[in-house]
Length: 444
Image (cartoon, rainbow, N blue to C red; front, side, top):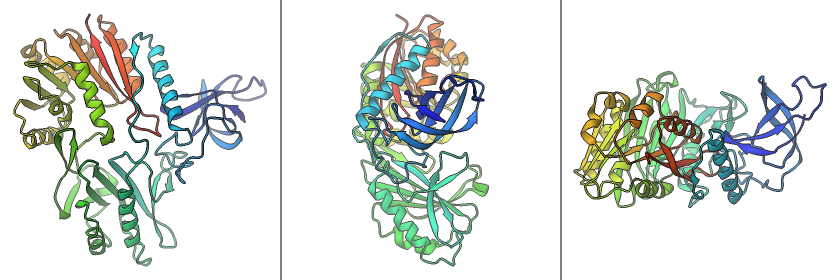
């Protein structure tokens, strides 16, 4: 099928419409979604999934490339699901993302001031955490792979990634050299490598994951990875049946944790810690949160969905009190440690479900508090929006990594008379469809 890509939409899809041809079984004018496409492309596509009102397709041939299409620098881009937009120059990526963000709010009928998108300081090499799957070919050769976007459980060979640092790629190459040193020795359950990096500390943590307690090439891997001084922590992590339940870890050498710095603050990263994927952009994000929240001397700040406490700690200098609420116990443990590391005494981190904590009436103790929301990608539930809307606050700052659920939640707030005064989109994830935003919600 011939298709002209008209524009990009959220989640990295290009969209075109089937030509008005009554003979086609899809029906005239149906929307066709195509990953890795660029507005202006004229393509030959193959339908892979049909729905009532749209279809998904893959590119079979580029008949006429868009003027916006460039050659992607990554040799694995055409099949790897790690990013969607390396075939578009970064300034054009920003323009498309800004358009998509505005359309997302427009669809919900939200009228507000949208500030100019803040671009990333580095469009490549910004990721501080990444996973690679390790597989063994019939020949005995071992290769690293990433998710193949064409198939739900498919893999594509990828020995490096341009979104992570050169040092991370060097670590991958070192591991691959070791496991290929003996073609007759099987991987025997060794299936994944995870690398975490402190961008501002130059400290690395490496996890070697197996399905059972046996780690092939253990001695050789320890020897080889000790040759890279930036690796401060090496773990063998056992995940039975490749599930994340019942994880067991052995520290093979080094420290159990590494550190990262954001501004003047230092944060501990353990194997279970959540940390923003783009360390280089976190300071910019947190400064925008500080600006929107207008934290002043004597203020109490409620940081709901606080994770490991990084936002609250970053804002703690002027505030009288930071109260962080998080349902994940390990994250609360890390938050308390992070406060101690930075000698901060005005942060209290509570292990609780934000919804239930509010229902228990605890919020009544914090009249006129500044409120920060940084929920997971699924956003807020309607009950929490309703409860927040009844609170006595002047401003509420909503941080989101999912514009679609952000817009949905803003529309829900509007039912209770609240308004999105302004919103700041930030590109924390160049080459991908993801976009961060910070919104300021007011009762006035």
